[in-house]
Image 1: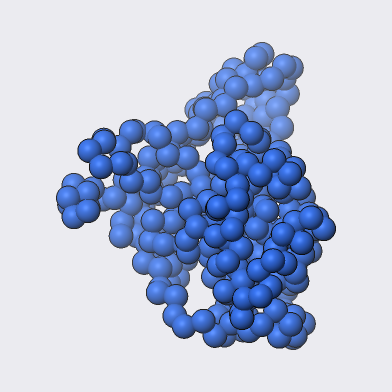
Image 2 (image 1 turned 60 degrees about the vertical axis):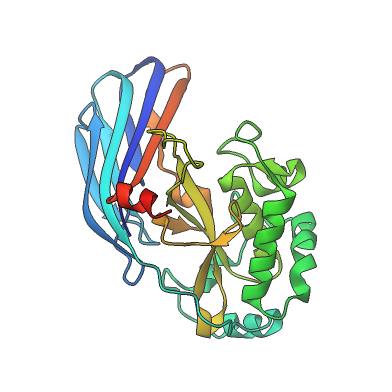
Length: 299
């Protein structure tokens, strides 16, 4: 499946900013065996005084910009065409949780994909006894993959989607107490629960194609950036991705931007400003199949 993706981030500042430095993580990468970037572009208004592009430790595309001139708004626009072809998830040959811990101990690599990076508490996904106890209900499942799938489904059923309940600064413990939030919160709760059981889990940021209800037109700009979870299911299975917001495995409708230990590692934009007062932010995302008419007609 190929998608055309358009993202706009718009910021209005209460006062003129005398300068700013930002790191932006919104460009999808090519991931062998999962997705291929056909074309992509990223632009800024005002035009940055300095710009550099690189990949961070976990392989996420990063664009660092410096704006030295005074400005009262910032616009980030990304467009990309991405082909996604995720492999089918085969038979469950993942180990038990106790066996997984032995396999993790035998992985001595510190490469970006090593499960060792995704075991410890992180900023947004701390080890919380209450969340660990909630995740432990799934320990009756026969394998790590089955446990993760069960936990994914329970979070989907037990938590309410509420865009007003949390912010990007909300931690897993707070979202767990509320039993509500958005994709970021559901992912952080799942990550914290799995890590509490000794299962490596990471945060994936990206886009998800949404399909309008029958008879309704798709709204331009109605989509938003999405988040889901990757779980290390042992030496044989490797990393498998779960979407607790939608109670499913990541599919060809999931387009990856980056991954990390939690949201802090893959926030779309972080930085500093030389200004006073606050700011208002708007985000708009369109994820459209390249052959949208035939896709919708086939459904």
